[in-house]
Image (cartoon, rainbow, N blue to C red; front, side):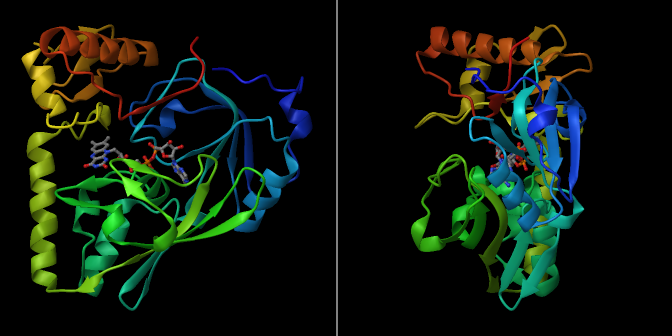
Length: 305
Ligand SMILES: Cc1cc2nc3c(=O)[nH]c(=O)nc-3n(C[C@H](O)[C@H](O)[C@H](O)COP(=O)(O)OP(=O)(O)OC[C@H]3O[C@@H](n4cnc5c(N)ncnc54)[C@H](O)[C@@H]3O)c2cc1C
């Protein structure tokens, strides 16, 4: 639902920052689906302090949303109201500290997996297969092949909507399936993960297996948002979708992947509406066929046009 924002021109309320501000910024090129509208404002902070001061100064009614690489997100065609925060190269470091790895919010998950491999640390192999950033991985409790963020999480730093910084330790955060219980307005800025020393050859072998399995089973080189629906308890979403005859189903420029039918694909000219309509049609058909409700895993965000 759209929030009433008490300003007439967003230019007027944006403070001086050290990072980068862009108005009416296209987001489609920043997401895996390569579709969707513009952000009223896109802010790439210079550092933690820049972000905190920025959040303190903008009116609290203005919506703020962090964006990773949009690998789990469908941005609607009308774009995003308010401010989108993106973490650039200043937030991409991955640092080894003994058996711990500290990673900033914008670091690609695969960089963390590679750092762990170089250090002979095990527990991080699954991140080889998740194509997002560390910020998005914590928010979504990303997981694959029986492991998830919960298993390696040690601590994190987050900033809230008012610019206050919070330290989160593993004892005061709860993870569940593709979810964490931190307040919705928390934006993760960095995190520390704990691994165990293991055999580098086995770690390398496991990462290769994960890469190969992904390649074989998922449409990786397409414009997609990953798994579209959560697995309902006791079911596989893809089996329900297959059973309802939806493999290859198409609406406009969007299609249910033939390779993995829990993936939706932008075949080139899909609008976000095509993709969302296709997902809703799949949900309808699965409900009619099996009586099971599919819940979206992909975050659908923004204004409808
Ligand atoms: C081909 C493919 C394969 C995939 N395989 C898997 C898989 O095996 N396992 C899995 O779990 N996921 C998988 N995904 C989904 C996706 O990669 C994960 O959910 C990933 O963690 C999202 O990271 P992101 O940085 O792209 O986040 P985005 O998609 O940009 O954002 C996702 C959510 O996180 C929030 N967010 C982003 N950054 C921050 C931050 N710094 N602080 C707070 N909130 C933030 C956003 O606001 C949004 O709500 C796959 C996706 C694709 C395209």
